[in-house]
Length: 190
Image 1 (cartoon, helix red, strand yellow):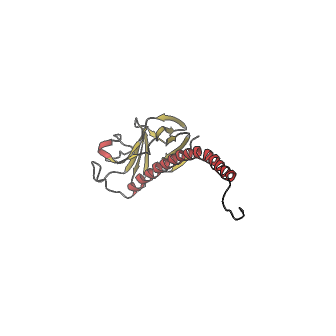
Image 2: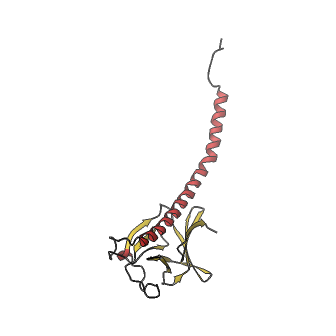
Image 3: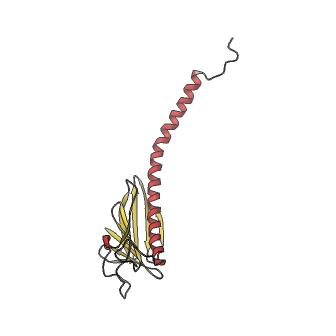
């Protein structure tokens, strides 16, 4: 009487539904975690690329139409503990020793302000000089043509050997490190 029936029994449907529910319960929490990790990684690569962009603009001796000076004496990037940072053209001339007399002036020299993704900000900035590390509030990295020479300073104008910018989102942390040689690298936070 029921020899050619095709379809699924109620038990088979319940088993398939149970498997889908178990897989969903395992996958959804990891999905959100993966999104946070990806957001932190994208932001650190963005910071890395913008530091390299400042170097490239310096090497190209590019004009800065957005700055108060048309042809800057190099480019730089300025970080504070915030969700934004600035790429700028250096309008001040360099001194004989390679230093700068005046600190970065946001409205006059700013070329572009870069916003980090929503929910992310620069959590910590670390300066290193002569083997010692300390937390700082601001970090400015200047590139001076033609080599380009690198000048890394804290908020007080003190020259540093290396600057580290830490980005955190959720339980994930990555850092971007730059030094006086011009090396820029990304690594996991210790």
